[in-house]
Length: 447
Image 1 (cartoon, rainbow, N blue to C red):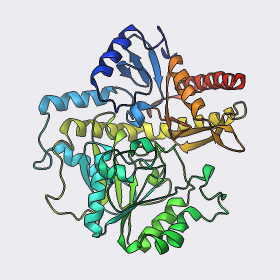
Image 2: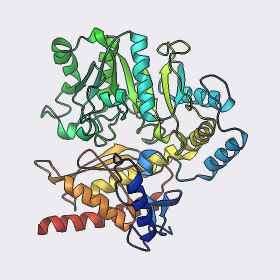
Image 3: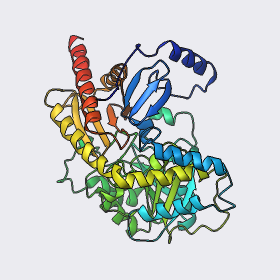
Image 4: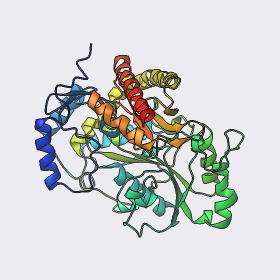
């Protein structure tokens, strides 16, 4: 039996309050801080706070801690690497784990084309590099991205991002030449159509409207797209969506760039969500789950696309030796058991969540693959009015009961636990969610 969740003192406890007070006095006002969790340690799918409360982690540091918190093999790899050397700039010199990781990332990327890898520090940096590579390779200025997308918060990646206004407000002007179009969000079709009778109108409209009235396709360097949208609400497009999008890209010589920062590294039961859709991206941006929490990212591109010459792009800390070793072990663990486990436990969770819809009117939709699952909450299933306040209440109440969740979009909660969670973890999470939904629905009914 699991020794978590266990709430000794309602959070935040006295020790947590001390840390929060100091943090709030000295840190940037830009941080979000979802709820007053002050972490002391983690193990597997368990997080313990400074007051001894233990939580079941179903957000994994925003889909980062792939193999669980402080997996022994990852920790051992970090220790051994740190004892050798902590840094030698990989832009200028060589070391074994950098070359090994670059090779491994190229090998696990979707498709048969030979790939090359650039290692960086973060998801936003991977997207920034992909922007540069796309412009350099195509010699074209424009980009297409999607409403609901999240590609990062640095200025180039933020120019592609369109998930929340607070992320963009007062930061203009953005990178010129970025055009946003609606995403394949079937539950909330922007064109009020129904799949499959819509014939993928949301994709075909690129050619039928945008390329004839606003955007010259010959000027477009790349389409940046999340195979499954992350921060936009874990939005899962139809299975033929990306194939059609890729066909249009190929027709006009436009690069198809897959942002797999949140959906990659085994989370969906595949190395990359692009594989679910049968698409080989020209460029892939990878980060988050690549090294179990160590800061590292990758741009993986077809060799025919990664044509920039020496000196055109680099990174002082990118591909840090300690992070590279952690990534190599993380990949081994995903390959051995965890990717298959994501499929197994994820399928169980999706089935149980869909059954839960029968007794909880707030659940409007359940969607996802593997352990990338979105639960969308609505006040009325017919009108699909977004239950935004209720969604936030669910997150906060679950926290007080010992379950760590995160929202995405306006009214969606994600299930994105470490890939090593088992059925017992799943049942704990489901029971807490069930209990929390009952409370929130009763409160809403009283009001």
